[in-house]
Image 1: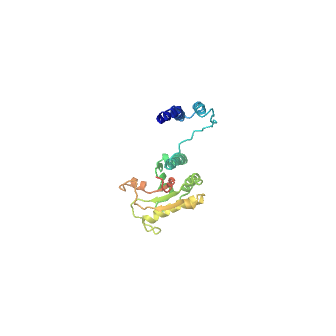
Image 2: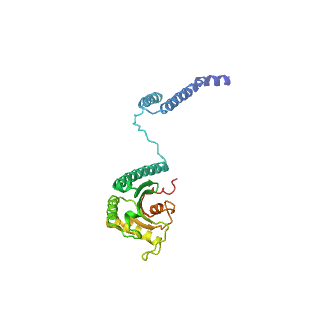
Image 3: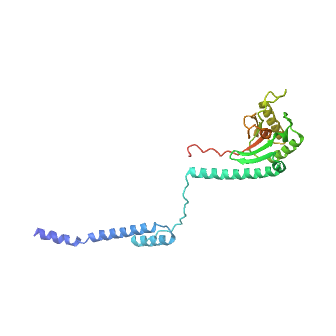
Length: 250
């Protein structure tokens, strides 16, 4: 008799699990709606999400919000390398423009073969035959040479690049009371050009005079013509080096 009363008393709750199951299904539906909507955020899908969640949770809707796209953050090394590449490109273009201007200024001497203007990774080289600049065995600039170099100085005066002036000789030992060897002659000739550049407004901090003597010939010293080629002064306009990488950036 007691058993019968117990079964009759619990009968009124035997369908309560349906309520919990319905809540579970509702939440599961809302979850998949959210997953679908956030796959690509746009106003249309956000409205679907808001309406679906409102229906699932008693008619309340989520307030719309504006979304803006965010550009991906580039690694620091990528940004630094890109800026270095852009700076190198600008430097190359500046040097190309300067080389064209120097060629135009020295065109008569370039055509006669007494001056060569070339460009390489190191910078711009102006090679002037010593006969254009000096008397044989001397290091005093001739009047015509001062005029030509003055025009070159005018182009370089406001340019920021460093300048190295190199003196070169052939392998014939010099017989002069002024200069003990070709080393002294080449160094003093380079210094004469540097001094003229300073007189024409180029800052001395940008300049260097170097004497190489006969150690760097451009042709074998086996003929008078080749020896004449080796007696020269080279004005080297040095290209700017790229900025060093910050610590820790590769």
